[in-house]
Length: 307
Image (cartoon, rainbow, N blue to C red; front, top):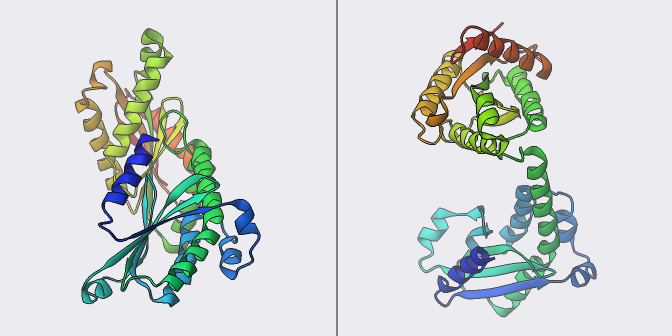
């Protein structure tokens, strides 16, 4: 609550006299009207698609050089015409704070070519009121989706989401031959942490290891908790050499991590490349076999199992 209030206060202070309006919609008010924009917005629960639909209704009005939707955690650029901003001289800002039944959703920030007339302001207010409840539903859907696909402990993708992403990656590999590599990692020595220090301590180690993985991989790489102390990394547009390099980088990062070093943990891993005739099951099976070969051969190493 303090973060939300601070952000809104900061937005108010940064306006420097430019227009600000709060759009506080109620369910009854919106349901009592029938508009084509509202119908369009109700066709999707995907937040970015919803915002795109709204932006396309703003374009014909030729009001702004840019439009953003800003929440407490994120910012989406809906429209941006850099050339128009450079040629228009002074930029007039208009910000609308959006609420649905007293729930704060975020704010629409317009960079305008000219100050709003009273008539245009009323038109915008009406459009904003139509946006509020589809926006609330899309944001709730997104939050529920994130909860369904995230591991409760580490915040990484869970096994169910891994299988979904793997299926899509196999499709990409088959259709446009995008090379994907995969690592299945197991933390050597983690059982001793649980046995000697307790499961709560072990949970903290897993969370720290999950953070380490995210910090030492590319933005396009995806990380999942497979179960227990096993993790999967899917590396897009990567050769087998690239997969091996990624494992080496993670090994070094684990050894240098001051928070995890006292536990004397190492990693055993299986590496595979996705094949055109693979299934989710076959990829995971090959990776699992390779990982256990690494553990049986002395641990703290990588074993590749490619076709």
